[in-house]
Image (cartoon, rainbow, N blue to C red; front, top):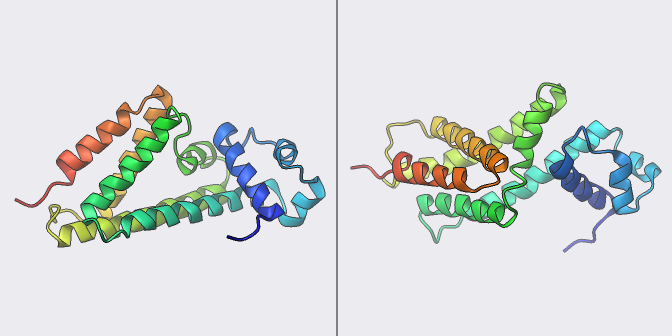
Length: 196
């Protein structure tokens, strides 16, 4: 495991702060205070708060995709089992935190999409990458006969992500995992059904 750099410390602190306060309410001074990094060092690594924010997004996406690939690429399970395991794992993590966080990308999408084209574009690129990964697994489910193949896998993946993001928003608002459980019940009880 590599040594944690000053840049890494700043990005980790930025991610925590964006999750807790959002982007607009996240002051650079507060992030510097939590890390003990001087302001000059911040601007050595990042040209502006926006540049910093975009790098926080990229880092989050990199880590998220690694977890997603680890679970969806687990060939000891069927593709449908992988999908279910992934969403149940996320649900358990959110429940352990009283459903307070939601999804960092979804949260920032709601906050920033109307205010910054750079953020909107990066957030959409991240979401599109997640849809691609879901679509791969859903297409594999269809090829193996675990799901109906009457729907386009990419369109189904879009629906899957949109529904999940909505469930995350409701869970955060309600401080309850009930919307996540509804998502799991409907997706795996109705949408993701084997061919008959």
